[in-house]
Length: 236
Ligand SMILES: NC(=O)c1ccc[n+]([C@@H]2O[C@H](COP(=O)([O-])OP(=O)(O)OC[C@H]3O[C@@H](n4cnc5c(N)ncnc54)[C@H](OP(=O)(O)O)[C@@H]3O)[C@@H](O)[C@H]2O)c1
Image (cartoon, rainbow, N blue to C red; front, side):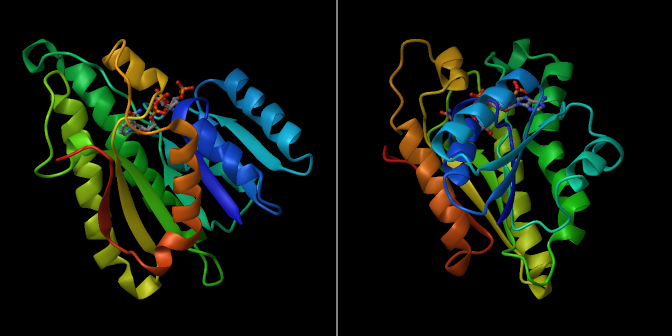
């Protein structure tokens, strides 16, 4: 399958790309700002599976010129897309009143507009014979009715926005048989989590979460469309 995963230089995206690369015949485009880390990912994937095909692309989602700058780079590798995982995320942990509008805009750019624009630009490449699963990675903080945390207002609001967009797009594109789903993750031990909650222990295991995302990307669209699914072992 042809897979695109954003935010693959570290954390959940890195591990998820690694898991996809273990499966024969998968081609994976990995995107982030840190090209060196993406090359490390490629090396690690090759160690696990010599035949793995993983194509790193350096891109900053704050730029939001996806049509002009990112699309041509993607099309160098493939023109049919089976799975898109919008995983790139940014969190600035600050009280609401201290968060400057530019910081809020950056979070919305990376967490919401980059994903929405990437979907818009890539929709024509989900062809009749493709697997057609688009997954947006959200957070329990953006899940309606969940426990909320101080210092995460804009981050959580941007994650709520992408969850809602998922529901809307599944309706808007139901005639095209594309499945849009949103995974609202609980805490996972990554750089992002460690920076926001120093010393805290996350409830989800990084590698297990990556395996779950891969399994969900491959099979979840048979059972779910337009769903915002809480992936969390803590309550509520
Ligand atoms: N960890 C958790 O507890 C948790 C919980 C709920 C949801 N999530 C969500 O899961 C996703 C992955 O999070 P993580 O914990 O793995 O975070 P992470 O370790 O901080 O990784 C974030 C990824 O996003 C990329 N990214 C950030 N800003 C970018 C930009 N401007 N342009 C391109 N790429 C950018 C980073 O790449 P570069 O820095 O190389 O650009 C990195 O690959 C995020 O959407 C996050 O909100 C995480």
